[in-house]
Amino acid sequence: ETSFIGGANLFVEGIADQVLLAGISSHLRGIGASSIDTLDLNNITIVPSGSASSVPYLVYLARGRDVIKPPCVALLDSDRAGDEAVKVLARGGARGKQVLASEFVIQVGTWAKARTGELSVAEGVTVTELEDLLSLSVAVEAARNYATKVLELSRQAAEVLTEEAITAQLKCRSGSLFDALATVFSDQLGEAAHIEKVGFAKEVVAVMVASRAVASKAAGVVEVEQNFRLLLAQLAGLLRRAQQEEQYRRLNNRLNRTVARFLEDYPTPTTRERGRLLVEEVQASVDNSE
Image (cartoon, rainbow, N blue to C red; front, top):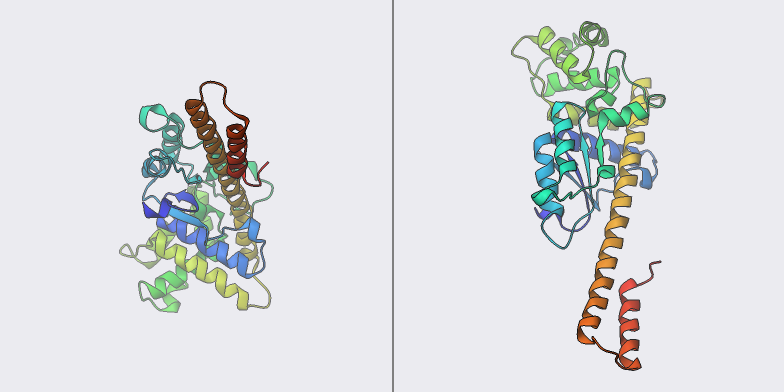
């Protein structure tokens, strides 16, 4: 719970999402992307919830119990679990009180549909999760690296993982890029071979960082950068708006308490001097805000 104290919070479903967002955001900053269109990891905590169903509860822990309500945004997959989490967030927490406005809840698939003309997505992929924003070439390279580092296979053995194999799998069963990759991974490297999302996410970030040392970037790397630039800019903007709204809420609460306390102390007309003290207290509360 200590992660909810202080700055803004971005709630995601799992650690793999945290790794991808933090790693690619840092990579984009490293190549000169605008700071306002990426995540400031000094002031933003990316909170992995463990599952979509846990997101509403963690949001309630952050915002539903205390006077201090940290700014929060939730990013969910566009699957059945994500849909249900969105409904729970809309219904609200204790006593049906909504603790996070719908404008601060993003589902990856819904966001992607609104950006159809701007995103580069592999053929046969339906965007429902962050991994679907990866290019085939980056996904394959990351999977090969995973096979050599985690499974300790030779590079030659890992080379059987190809873009063509994943494309063929997507033609048979379109949908998730990672699911297609995981199927090909087991088919080509043996039933015992399994690729998990967190390790894969780390290798994706490593591939992106390594691309900085290459004079001419591969097209797949540029596609991933563009896709995540768009998403991170959206998230960064929402987090700033959430911070602004929380500042206004706290300001209004301070003013309301100041005025209410004055009216309790002086239910009948009082002196101008006491009125001046109230004005000074109000001015001190609003600082330099509009």
